[in-house]
Image (tube, rainbow, N blue to C red; front, top):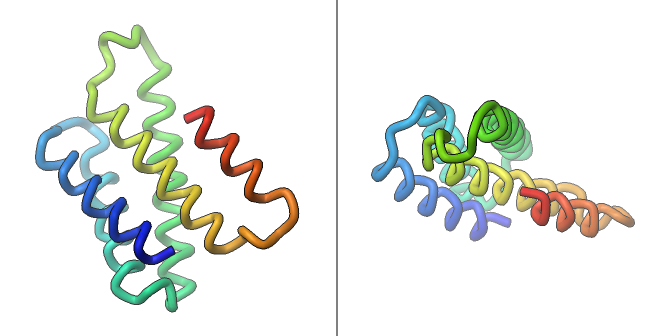
Length: 114
């Protein structure tokens, strides 16, 4: 929920302080959105939906960056961004759809694959 979003925002901020990579701008945007979700406690559903869309977009961009060439040539920032975007997306999805039958196992599997 909101506490998870706050923790993810802090972790992502720390990553961004250490890393400069092509996805940094998108990661910063996600960080701001997660912090906003945390401030409102998830009460603003439109804000939460926008954060989820941003997390999914960063997840897709980082997945592409991680699989476009040799692993050793991928900037470490992309790895961090992919992990944090995946955690953010799953956390937000669980908040929205966690009570739907079958949703939790599918989301846990998504994290396993991240």
